[in-house]
Image (cartoon, rainbow, N blue to C red):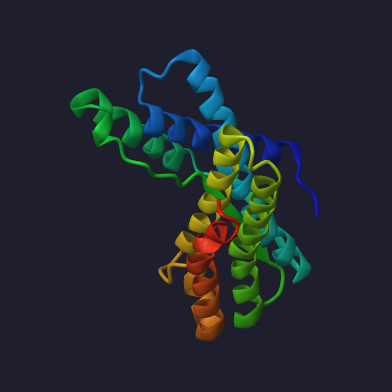
Length: 207
């Protein structure tokens, strides 16, 4: 699997845009410089890592099944996300901000036919990767539970990755869930349950 310079650049731009939307949504447009830097870093580490790993998982399995795959940023989606979080705040105030992200996706070019099962697995790979990233954040949160600030960021990373998985499993095209359902509704239901009930796992560790 190869990620070229243009593809890496588009991913980086998407990650920064996601972090910016997150920062403006959570802290408002008048965020102080120190808070801006902190929230941007937190957004890149939590949301950004989940987004990139999700897309790379799609790409890996698509290539594994003989297709060509490449991430492409969606400039219109990035512009819309920024507009929805900025414009309502300017007009009505911080409470009117809308959190929306649609930075881009992996485009798959099949050199030969991809079966419904293979397409389902390619689609499920993204949410499954979010589970893996969430597990890493949870493990780190347990390790660093004595640090309130650090554990809070890590738990946010855990929850936001499960939320990304759950959102992408909505069975409406072009979301991943529509292709997983087309392959096997039982697999889809299991994935949804893992994403949903996984939210309660931190409580087991007293977090």
